[in-house]
Image (cartoon, rainbow, N blue to C red; front, side):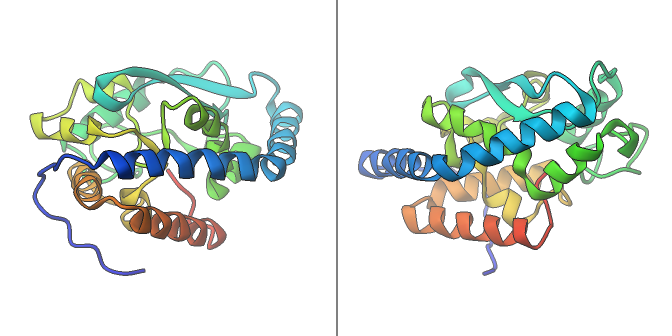
Length: 224
């Protein structure tokens, strides 16, 4: 994996030709992969049901391009009906920069613990299979395969002014920050990676990120 130098945030206008090509690639990849993905989706759904019951799919409001609110789909990986207030405070502190990285043992706030994650959910997270339902968001045009990961509204409420530059493009299932820094870096670093991607984005870089994502999944690093 080549080294990416993260520059200071500065967003450039994107070419319409690239955006159209990127959308076409998203649609072709989704339609091409669906015959393979559908059996995997069914197996994941059955595993979740027999392990921890319903709901199988987790739906959550996120902030997409231009501040538009979207509803993303993920396989449920945590136990149902959990109190998420502590996790919320942890992530808000992480966005504000009060916590260095999104891992346990950072400051006063505690993130989700292992006993909140189901047995199947742990496997789905490790393999990133929990993200597969977001292909629906890609087909709907709310997301792209590659782009900044979308945050929930209460995380966006904690943004610094320059953080909003990451909302200038469609959010993605995977992105430069996920393959370069994973969950072990600060939120400011994630945003800088996202803006660096926006400045440099092209189809070659998108394909590189997809390749790096596949390598990370097969190496069992897992997305966060």
